[in-house]
Length: 364
Image (cartoon, rainbow, N blue to C red; front, side):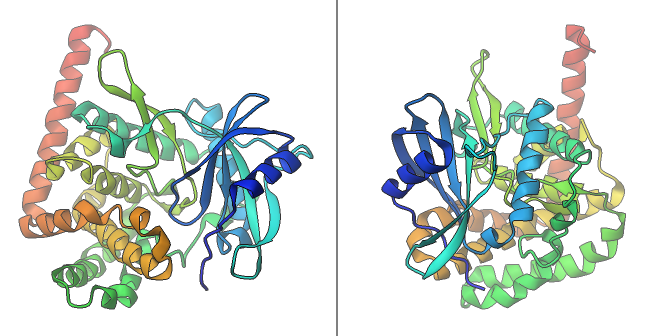
């Protein structure tokens, strides 16, 4: 089923804001999106918002969107910097709008979310401390999500969702799009490694609900008093699914590697933050290397495929490819033993230093 990305005009956004929310936009500009359409909207009545219009395929599952918004609200209530939804003037959090965006009349789900200030991770130089905090935050988000209650939580069991890491073997159907590039051989080998080394151990992974997309574009930061940055926002819950804790860690490591001059070191720093909250078991440790590679292959392959379907959004869709291909080759050439040595030694050293500093400062 082809997914149609909505193409609402600014005048249509003005009409939606006035009709649904009784707000008059004083400023509107588009925001990047992988598959939906997002607009920044400042209202004359006060307040800054993101008007989110879901693609035609995801708009067919309002129950999933409702769970995602409940998760955002639940995390916000528990101190996490997430967006919350503003209801329409009739009290609905989701509005269904029928419009022709060039593909015939389609129904699109419309949400109005609070706007969170800050820059994405992709726009700053990440420090070891920030990478540590990102790992820590990712673990805390997943732990908190285990307490989420909703009558339709079962919709998160997205077994056929291609972005679910459990479906890594299904990437074989997309390999031909690489058309003989050197990357094709690596991706084929990674899929084989997943089937032989990860699938047999998956029964030992600890299950949970995961955000599944804590990327360099979905974590916002602001400057802090020490001259570094603090996490100021977690956005885009569209990938939420029932998965495993280790998946969230692998996804976070993969995306943070894209933004670092020495990407191999990144895994240990994110891992240190994660394990300060939620230590891995032996099976999870043993599979982390292949899972991070699987994340890269998934992102690179599916982005390339989606560009073939939506060439007008190529710049955003291919944002991973700029550094991703180089990092995949580097990870693969170094090999599991060497990469794990760097990751686990870095994590142990960072956590030892952190404990020492806290003990010295009297905070422990």
